[in-house]
Image (cartoon, rainbow, N blue to C red):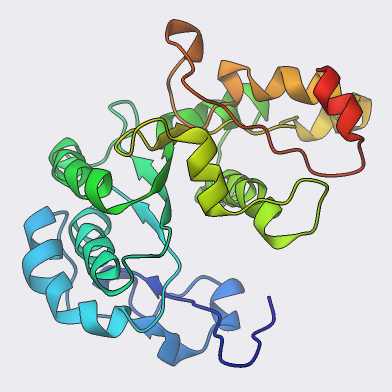
Length: 262
């Protein structure tokens, strides 16, 4: 994205104190050091510290500009994250806010307070976010094990799934297409009531590296994968509930007629 006159490209990343000086390589070298926000200590997996004390000290510098993805498990992502979206809502009440939120999972957990951090965060995301894409580590690990056939998935593998999902959801905002859209149009079509803005995300194609060359990527195949519970980025089976609304975003060389027929 190239900045135009009187515009800026928002970019903000935050780590806990334990990660100070350990920016990811090589991607950490892409950003200028003064675009990072560091504190002297982390939130220690404590929601209150992230929201009221440690996070509150950093919030003004974080609000310089922003791009938002959050992890609900730790104290920084939940406590400071909820404070951040409330501040953004106060400063920019007319702007749409889309969040990609990683929820805690009982099967993939390293701290006992993760459910408390997530519970304390829910109200803030209900009130202050316009659209919330739900992800969780359990589903991401299941995709790596069962679909991608990875024996020891790394955080890089999990982050690749998340980044591919984020890219797919926002591609209709960034590239020209037959049916261009924006976040406001997405909200109008998908949200029946303002508080019901938590979305399950499915992604296709997901294929193991060894079988990629043998897999036919047709519109019917992509459509079938997209609605499969194994391709959902959160550990919930849609067959056990009902869809209120749905949106399918196709990317690549295909005709609108072919998509509509499916």
